[in-house]
Image (cartoon, rainbow, N blue to C red):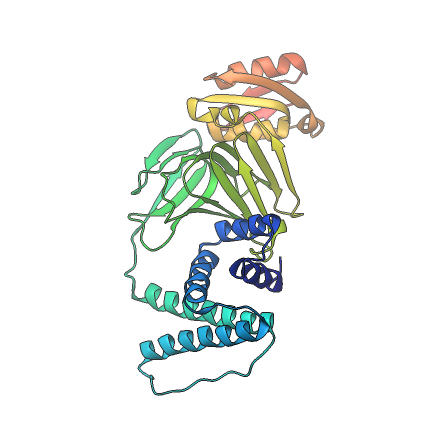
Length: 338
């Protein structure tokens, strides 16, 4: 969605002319972006204080009052109260657009000044090597189960208006609810926003796809290679829904899934559903710490299905090889399939 469409929705909402479909569209945008949500609160604040209209002329006069009040408050903060601003009268929505942009710029300037004054927050980084899983509790009470070959970085204490963490790899989150401070997970070419819910994220740097599945609550999956305010770049997920995003093509696919299975890795269970042996080999490398070597490239494409509950590497390989024959040898550091 472009900026003009966003301004149109805001104006329709302020004037009470917005349709139910448009209102849902605007709420989705505000839910995704905490910055736009803060701006919208300012729009409503000034509008409710000044705008009462019966025709287009009254609207224009009211809008001019709003902008003058905004300018006066900004000048007061700068110690320039004696400076005078005036506007020519424009058409209803043109003037509204100017007002909305002015508020946005004022809020951006204010937040920038606040952020500059905030002291640096100490960051914590947790990395699990191959064959290792762990659980960490963040300062807000959020719990994160981190899979093998995965890394998460987060502040010792969350400050400011949002909670931000960075993830590479796979993790299962139980985010502590806080409607006033949304929780963001930053990934390579994407991010996830939640208020308080449980979900699984798989975003390994050496895999082409990113996957997110929701166990409880609601999350917004947002791609970052396009404008984040564009509705087509945001997918809202609820319980038992999964999104798969291609980092290369930008394609986004959503589907119904058994989300309990998606998080079973935290209990040491491996579940393969028609996965190629090459994809399975990545799981085996991370879980058992052995480099997988294929002596026959055709074996990479063969697909297997199976569930393994705390099974050893030999047990997994034995049962997989029964369905479609392959041979294998292992050393302390490698697994060779032929």
